Amino acid sequence: MSTVLQLDRISKSFGGILAVDDVSLTVQAGEIHAVTGENGAGKSTLMKIVAGMYRPDAGAVRFTGRRLAMIHQELLTFPDLTVAENICMGHEPSRWGWLDRPAMRREAAGLLARLGVSLNPSARMRHLSFAERQSVEIAKALGGHADLLIMDEPTSALSDREAELLFRIIGDLKQSGVAVIYISHRMAEIFRLADTITVLRDGRHIATRPAAELDEERLIALMVGRSLEPLGGLQKGVPGETVLEVSLPGIQFSLRAGEILGLAGLLGAGRSEAAAAVFGLVPTAGAHIRLAGRAVRIGSPAGALAHGIAMVTEDRKEYGFVPRMSVRENMTLSSLGRFAWGPVIRTRREAAAVEEQIRRFRVRAAGAGQAVRDLSGGNQQKIVIARALLTRPRVLILDEPTRGIDVGAKAEIYALIAGLAREGMAILLISSEMNEILSLSDRILVMREGAVSAELSPGRTTPEEILRYAMPN
Image 1: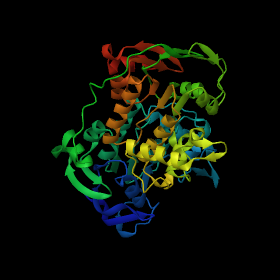
Image 2 (image 1 turned 90 degrees about the vertical axis):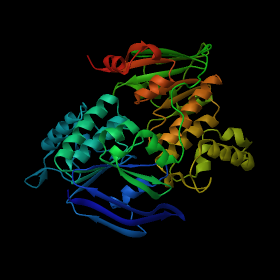
Image 3 (image 1 turned 45 degrees about the vertical axis):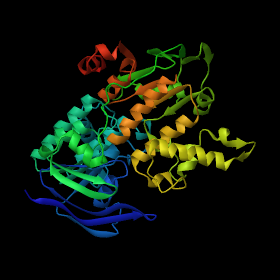
Image 4 (image 1 turned 90 degrees about the horizontal axis):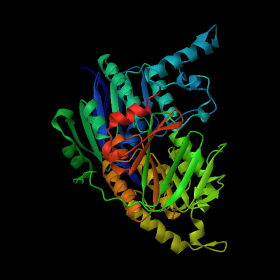
């Protein structure tokens, strides 16, 4: 095999914080090379250096291919352009010097069909869900005919069915000689796909091994430097009185104190839309919500928070945080009333609460004053969850809460969710990870084409049964 990419002793710092420290890496044509590590290990920074988005402080990048494409963890789409325009960006078909828009729509439709995604190529990106926008980014990368394809958490919002189709495409790319750098916190994906695995920790290169020489336990030990408790056996809450009753077109459910209600379904099934309606993110005709038996009207997130409903949104970049604000400002943004005395913020009390959350979630940051935009995606996600909990909600909606979070942090988040349920919090959990839904939920609702198709018991169902109810008729 020929070498497509050679990284020699790459280093990169941000504001005095060393994000990548003397890392070398080689990727061959036709190889699937997984790059793994905890949040803040330097994976995404290193890939942005490869893609030319960052200039390294030291070291050299040697790319021998003609084209490189990257699917970013934080999506880089053009919201006011169409699906077809986003997919064909940079390689637009033309006719007599003009954009050939029918050809663009045909190309977009063909690429999306390969992914098993049904989207209108003429739809504006801003009207799509996060998972749909992620599919568009994948289609765009596939359409670039690259010699090296970098995938940074490509399945983070995809269901098992959509992920399975993507894995088949990756296999086809490998057979045609395309090199793939694959970044994921999902162990099963890494061992299914990778030929070679490189581990980073705290910005440094720890090991590069053939995937066949590692198992999950050894890989986790290299990544985090410790062994983790298995997910099974979490002690959850005992469901009590009904706290939340929701009636939306095609969707009715109730949620009890101390209960974790899982919401499963394929991309576009309407899970995130249902959660957004409850939280007041989108106006929904015919929505009826009752809290503790009392009818309430929720027209905005502020109204939801006032009623004791908090939400961790699917798209943390758009709804979860303010990039230029600090860790402290983002964490307390929704709960400033707790730290205020009239118009004055009691800064010591606020700072103490923030430091407690930083320790609780093991947020890797230079300090509470660091801008959130400079943190890794997983650390940004931890801040979004911490901000929701600082509002002291009665009902917590978690939409893909572990997206982009490493295996060590995932175990901590799972224990936290179970602990919140034991304390009596009512939790609505939306996840594309089947193991997450089955292990954490007390009940599972399956959605299909905008409506609930089944209610299942985690102890008496299987991933196959869930998928059967989730598949379109």
